[in-house]
Image (cartoon, rainbow over all chains, first blue to last red; front, side, top):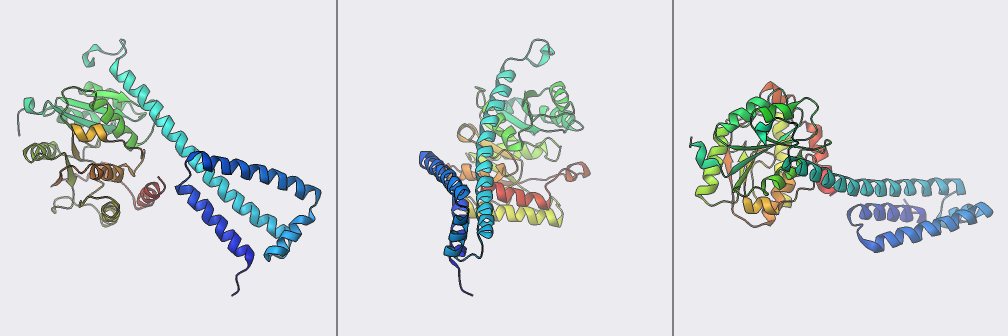
Length: 120
Length: 227
């Protein structure tokens, strides 16, 4: 079995997404994400103006048609988006937990007066 | 069993989530030996907090359900604000732990100057979990021992005695099942003396119906790896 260029690229991209799952802290990761988003937008406009660019890329990396190439790109983009959402939710949950804990502890320290006085 | 006065520096932390059927009895039983019991109500919807309070526990209420790990950490933070606290005991709300075991563990920690004593179901043959549960627990122990600097026979036992120093440093961020391994890992990283004690777990039908399933071990593993 001969390895096509597209296979190498896809495997590398999937691995990059997995790496991101484990180490994704800091301003650099965020900057890379933003640059990536801008490049994505630029390429989107280019591919709207010149749809044949997908075919050229497909031929270049060893995929039959441009539509297949779009599908592959979509799968990787979806995976990346899933990971980003997961990380965002995890951070959110940490903040949410701290907030809920603060409320719980503050309430416990000052028992509301309308509850039975035996436990204050 | 010792007099209640000698255990006034012990705080029982009981994470509570929809155990209204049994929590009143559990707290009342515990309070015969331990004056200080704090129930962290993790957003129960069955009025369990009321029963716990009526039985004499201090109740800290999460406004929403966060998970058992989060409830433990809340209990730790509550307990370390109490000036007379020397020991924290984590205790399950469903009545499967025995007060005699807690007393023995606290006495062991005091006698041998240990900073942590973990209850273990596998040091003797008294407890009888089913084979599936035994497999899950063994796997959890193997993973915990492999990834932390501790050697324990049972990493997922809810019964633990922790010193004030340990509780002051603990920061459990795993809200759900993986908190048990995280706790062991953090204690291991502190390089403090710790021990294990065989405890008897009462596997009642009630506790069995709520216990960890085989599927849960998959969740635990995922939560531990993706932290």
